[in-house]
Image 1: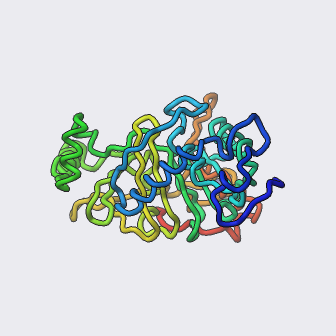
Image 2: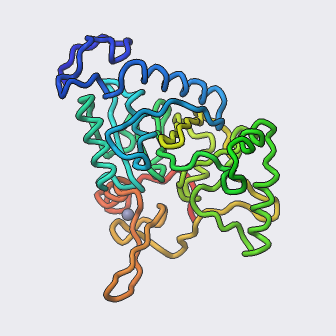
Image 3: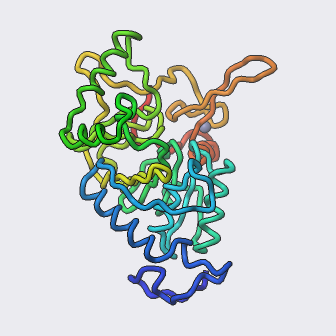
Length: 309
Ligand SMILES: [Zn+2]
């Protein structure tokens, strides 16, 4: 957009004017809301993995549809940013398209589906297959920020457990899972320990993505709008999935399976079942990655960062 801008100043203060649409301030949120959210982000970055409460604002979408992620995105985005929004890896789902259009409308920023080209990526339940770079920000939409909710319903009690780093009941839960089923059955929302201190819910990403949280060069921010919590993983933070010495953490196995569109055997695959024939087929969950591999003829495919069968 052709908004006059002065580099270095927060977007709201550059010209004191909305971007010329509907009378909203730049990026929808008022300056006070942005300031509060940015302060909470700084605190979250200072204590990696620790949940920081914030005053969640009403958004023009329903709570539970990404209001937390959207508030972080709007509080951080500047006119020079390039935005990507994904929902379960797809850029073209209704949720992703709606959020991208909304942010584009209230900021005028450029948008992209190309992971390396984006400066700010808002995501629901996936980490892009292509490696993230320093200075990129990944914003996660979080439904349930409290990893201990699985074992303790009381908020007061979970706060005590975090304060004392008392995660024995979580370990016991995992142990009982192994005794009952022979392995840990948690799929998405696998609990991780951050900096060997705070237990954190990584949002409902598959186990495939959990190892990518560890020492990632990008800044990762998490926000639950309904539960009013922000937490963060600064670049290069140590993140370990909870595991036992004799029962190590493992990711989903796609051994012998390939994407039906691009042929990749190195990405997280979604399973589809043909209703008529009952045949199962697989396709990359990360649609932009899949398209890139397909265009490259499957030969010069960008390598996923890590993980794989
Ligand atoms: Zn594919």
